[in-house]
Length: 91
Image (tube, rainbow, N blue to C red; front, side, top):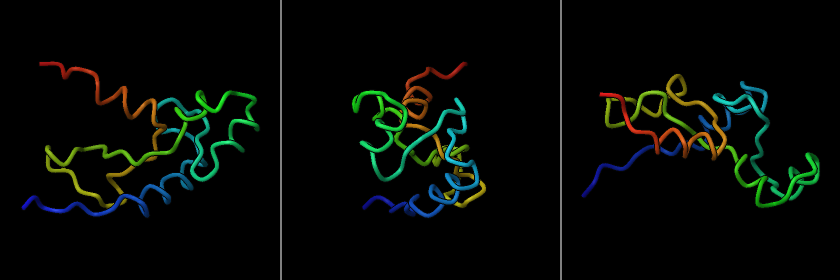
């Protein structure tokens, strides 16, 4: 059975607050709880606003020995998080 990972909910929420709701990578505002309010506030479509959902991101991945402790977790928008994982690593 695979080893279970600790939830990122608390460290992600803490990072969101510490970063003042801004993405660690692109520095744009993110949302956590209300997609439609966020879309309305920034006058963008629901589809566009979805990309700015707050996610928890490991600075050092589990596969590289990283943990789910607060000092290894940042808040990143869904778009940046997905783009970061799609990039090929430099050899």
